[in-house]
Length: 230
Image 1: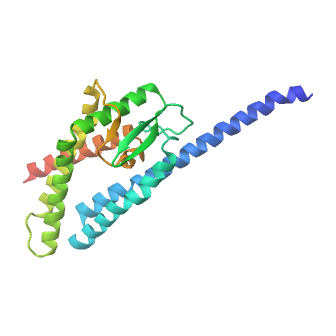
Image 2: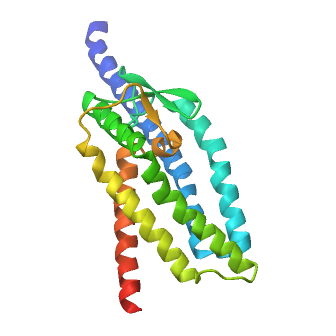
């Protein structure tokens, strides 16, 4: 009688375990998404400036610099529980170090293929960190300076064209980067991340690259239409 109950017990136990893992995976995915949404919030404040140039820029800077104090510790707690490439949660045997800033972070990949993809992408952004940084931070600096000049009553650039230059240059940079990693054949060791690794971990690098592609394509099309209308 007892022996006949063991298979059912094992089956229910396995089902409960799988359900628990799925619940934990979903919880981490939602937490990562919630933390990632602070990034479009910053972009909204910079580009739409709903509270006026000065207040909106100040709020955006506060969120941008404060975000890391929440997102980085969250990644540190879960870095080996989620695949850095696809964002899938699990108990992974394949872990490896990535140097980010002054610290080394141990991360995970759910398969050899995803480990290789992570290595290719990080190798690319290290090799081309200067043009990538210029393509992101130079238009951001122009956006911030021109917005603050507008708030001070000394406009340097109309707000619509200020937003246009930011969107166009950043979109070109991130869209090209999101595809170019596939051309990398020899990867660097040890792996480094010249940009905050926690921002890529929130959704997983692959999902983040798809956000870059979709939003970048939207910005480029909208920018082209703006030029044609003028």
